[in-house]
Length: 164
Image: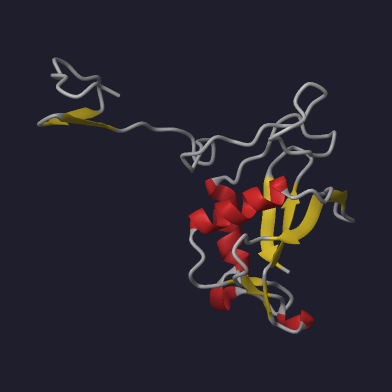
């Protein structure tokens, strides 16, 4: 970022200067770039015990909610496309809202447990303002809920996240 009053004398390939602003495009492999402008949570260790998240020992780093994970969540747990056995997010659930629910899951003090499919999961309060986030599955009654389940693979990839 340039200081105010800076004059752009040259720009790199992929950048365009308009007045005082330089706009640049970058490319990356889909799903590998941080989607949100925030600091990722820090993994708790023997030397880091506060402001951190506790994850199963199989995790070597804190997983991130990738573009691919969000696409999968929307495809399976959103709107009219959801099967009767699936919880669904409210129609107002944006990717940023999913990110907030995801971070609340990581920061929740309940431990992740290994499920029958070999993934780690936990169910937790997915809102910090007493608001509904979605509906439980029709098979479970379909009522509005504030809870979500986060499912993460042993490789640290977010498999899915859904209202419970």
